[in-house]
Image 1 (cartoon, rainbow, N blue to C red):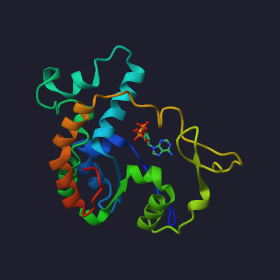
Image 2 (cartoon, rainbow, N blue to C red; image 1 turned 90 degrees about the vertical axis):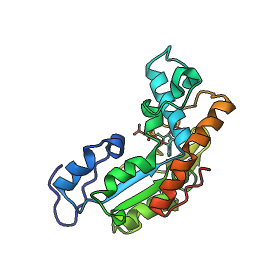
Image 3 (cartoon, protein in one colour; image 1 turned 60 degrees about the horizontal axis):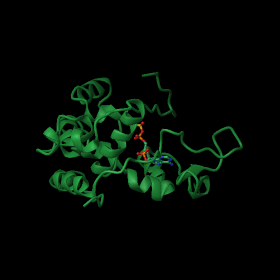
Image 4 (cartoon, rainbow, N blue to C red; image 1 turned 120 degrees about the horizontal axis):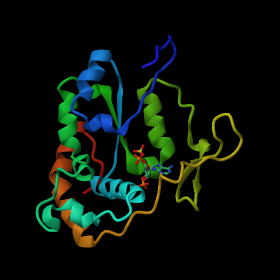
Length: 202
Ligand SMILES: Nc1ncnc2c1ncn2[C@@H]1O[C@H](COP(=O)(O)OS(=O)(=O)O)[C@@H](OP(=O)(O)O)[C@H]1O
């Protein structure tokens, strides 16, 4: 991590930190006062999004169903990373051994799309920053189907996230989605209890 001067905040982001066993110990060893921001989304949609990303790089990948269930029909395959990552309560347990809950901000991936200014407002408050980024910085881009920035920093043109963000998801049979939703329900409930936040995925 680069050195941080007074009045500066250093941010570092990698999605895999949250699910990496060694990450809490290493980050705590570096600075136990680190603030932790976790963006979470419905684990079923997250798994399909994860699959869509892998599929875009691996044509001929087996179907989502074949990967999500052992032998294609059996129990949910928690060894598949797209499934395992969505077990948020389990990953959070690992972090709470070292960091108190007050050090975390949980951002809703769904609200980041439906109300980006609201979620970014919570992030600014959590970091002790003035609410500089507000409603007036975003607009809904109908072509992209997502909110975008009216102006990129230092530029004058609108800016959306790149092609790999907000890509279409492959169609997954309703029965598969239902089974996964049932599978995640108890883990989601546990996660809501742990965080004191209901993300509304069930
Ligand atoms: N404004 C805006 N524009 C585009 N996409 C948005 C936006 N806000 C949130 N999202 C959601 O971000 C999802 C991609 O982020 P990831 O977490 O997969 O990113 S990362 O590659 O792991 O860094 C991406 O997931 P997919 O829709 O599955 O591509 C989006 O749902």
